[in-house]
Image 1 (tube, rainbow, N blue to C red):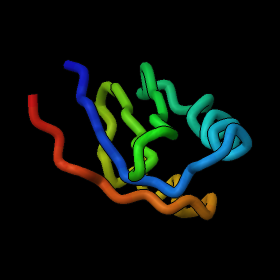
Image 2 (cartoon, one colour):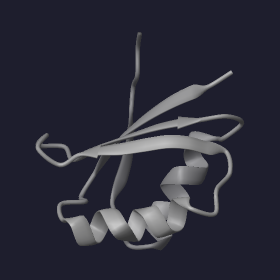
Image 3 (spheres, helix red, strand yellow):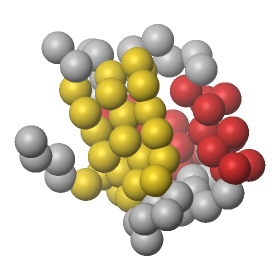
Image 4 (cartoon, rainbow, N blue to C red):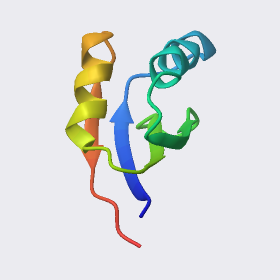
Length: 74
């Protein structure tokens, strides 16, 4: 089953996005991810299988990227 995670971030440039891409490349559980840099919260949306939301937050925070999980409802 695919889980969807939504995060508020401070990613604001293509350079930041590339930095995140390099982090996510080695995570096989992440199937798809996108940023909405136009949104005031710089939303990161992740589709993953077998991933804990805390794992993403810790990975990004270790890279110096602010990341706050947001509630997601269908």
